[in-house]
Length: 250
Image (cartoon, rainbow, N blue to C red):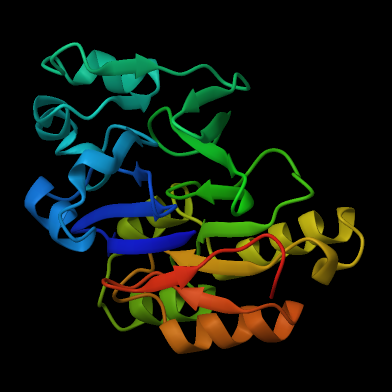
């Protein structure tokens, strides 16, 4: 299984899980031509697209995907705010698993300024991935995760310095802290999940950090901090990055 980052920032978010025969898209924040190029034009292999919430950098092109014939999955709030999905939208329910091709997808509630899902995604090739973005916290500690694709949007001291020097306003800072996940919280959450799984090496294979703020993060600092904290390969979801996901071999 490959995780392909099409893009991962406030200008647009989209990823693809590629099993070799099937492709599941995560988020609809990038145009279909960009998606097709990233997956080497294997668009007939797309089995669906899951979307976390209705904000444009995650869902702007959901209608374009649906018009192209891609079945889109997400919450009712997204359906209510996207009026023209060409009959290609499935409303998912919190805690209810949906089969999408060979992928099993189970949404769970996250915390943002609009209704939002995180997802547990299972496939025989990779085991189970936890995908969470644009959420300042995750309400449930979930163990037994093989791969994390999780937001680490900002680091507290960088954010505070940017407020101090006027790079961003206090109001912007407050909004970020109430709608996005900090590096410190991300590490605490990962530690809780891994502690519940026993030895991290027995379960978790990769941790990929996504949706880093351009101004309030440091990609290499974030990656190295997470890798050192857990002794697990850590990656940054940067445009064009391809990460191998396997449930059996580190």
